[in-house]
Image 1 (cartoon, helix red, strand yellow):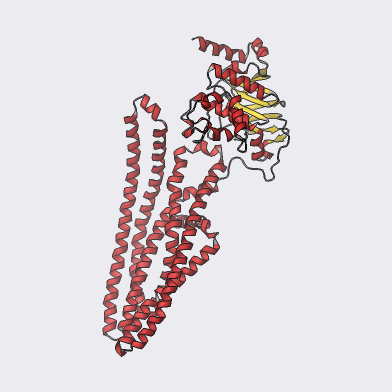
Image 2: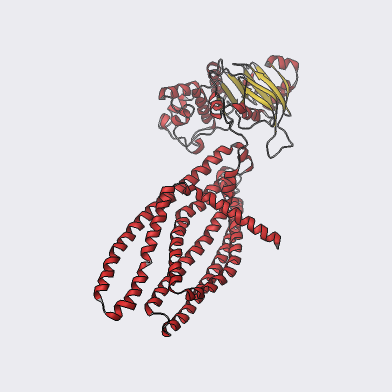
Length: 593
């Protein structure tokens, strides 16, 4: 029992910590928050004077027939109502400001955190799970800002003021209704805990469903080729049914909780009518006072019911927000240096000193093992080797998408961990195997390499990458939208736009990962000639499976099982008949098979 008690206390502390984090997104706006509280107090104060006016009319004005006093009271009531309307307008305005600022700040904070966490996060979290954060968790917390928090503030103020007036009118009748609320709190939490558990499962299975939905949509071509749409639909519906089952259970216990609440509230009202009527008949309470008490009672009951219901529902949303809270507490695998160093006049000297690396999900299977290499400024070095040998991983380490598990990388003698990430990325240019294009125009996608570039500079880069000819044939030329991820263009066209983007950036160090793999022979030859001409004097690191494309490089480094097997010029390595020779012979055998 003691262990359960400690666990419950820990859960409540954790809930409060998460709730404090959620509220912090609106709590920083102290001006609107203070105005909201003040407007709520004024509105509640004026609203709760009305039962006192009614009490005065019933107990004083009606028996005496003093109409002058009635008109005086009405004259006092009119400006109070006007004040209440002004307070309501202010409250609504401040509420809207806090709602939208909190909602937008949260969404932006989550987006920035996902960007900050980098590649290591996405290795262990599927795309569907990440999308679910914006489809489920973020909207859930935004509901707190847009619905629950403002109403809870307003109703809590109204509840406290009306409860104080209720006690002031008749403490004994107030005590009478307390046991009914206590009885609800003995029953309600049982349903609440079940509801919370089912809500959590619903959130988890929704993430699984979202991941499957994403796979089904992105894999549509593959599914149609294999005539597997019906099979895939069955899997999707299975996950949908599992998710719906959990949410149906959650809804059932929500209804049971609501029924228990209404029953205890109505029983309390019945007891109040019985004892209140007896008090009036016995003369211990005036009719006007009893009517005012009833009005305050129903105000308290309605307000308290709303507060309890919304607080309970909000706690469910807070539980959904736990995933976001954990996400925001994560630290990126790559830490930005406190005082990052900048680069001026980058020469392009790269040093790899005993570099080893293993991905986080496979720590016992290193991809690179003790790689030591120095690349001189302006030197062109190509990495060759079998698939999975660590070639592309090495490029990601040079770009500092990851830090090595052991060893160090330096650019112009400065360790990469000491450089500002912006300075490092500015010095590097990339063309990856998988080209990503934004759903914008061709012009915008090339200009992405250097946003301040002129239209003529963009066209010059496109001509250098052998892209200008096919762009001119597009319906709107450079203004043609490329579609989502560039689906309106062929693979070779996308790759040439990526090369044009890199040429426009004009970096000191160029990283090419299968840069010409998507081009036909003619285009590949033209682009290779353009790259040779434009990259003269720049440090170039390339990865290519078609070894004929790197014959002219200054040095070829062959990787085997994450280690450097051999390095040197193409002709010298071929004459040695070692690792490169075996790769070339294997490539030719496949070509002639």
